[in-house]
Image (cartoon, rainbow, N blue to C red; front, top):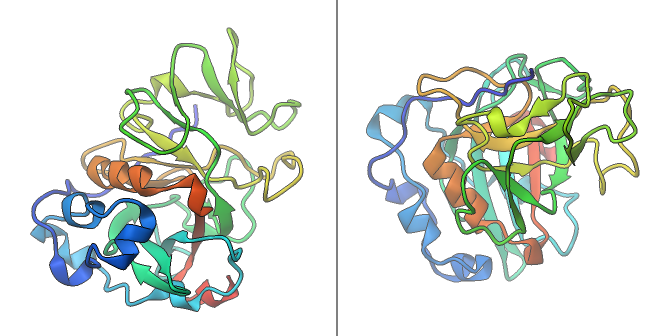
Length: 263
């Protein structure tokens, strides 16, 4: 079973005001003026991993014109397994930060420009958020359609299957690296699908190019790197999932910081 472990020491405590955008025009554009002051929080013990984000969204050049929300997952080089996740909203043609840099984890082999099935690295690029969010627990209040997982819910990660890299409900294991989603506690308490090797990025999933790349919760309190996904603390994940709005055509950009200019 392919297990994506999320990481980081426990996150809580008070908001860091200097790293959180004010809930004014940017927050209004997201449709959630309270998230940046109630959900984005960190504990003082996380300061050694805290990265001043600046405005990395201003470096992006290839986002669709209709995109008004962007999530940036970045890190210091390809080999790192520690990353940050930042959120931005587009207001009057300019990107404004919504959250500070949230501590995240990525694949145990870092970032990759050429991800393949079974290799635990996180694919770089620009992706959409899948049309449905999922979770073992009840809908936490997301704007996307939400499917609460039940026994028999799989993510098909069998490259030889016609349903490769899709959600399936089946009485039998689809084979390969396929995941029994309802069993992945707490990692899949809630998650969003990152559309790597999926539409609209590709017309049809390419066999062996990789599958099941999600934005999900840390699976342990101490934390490990993931098998390719992006992971956050429960509090930060729920905040991000609630903030994402399909009407604003959000995108997620995954890259070492030095290469953000590609996108």
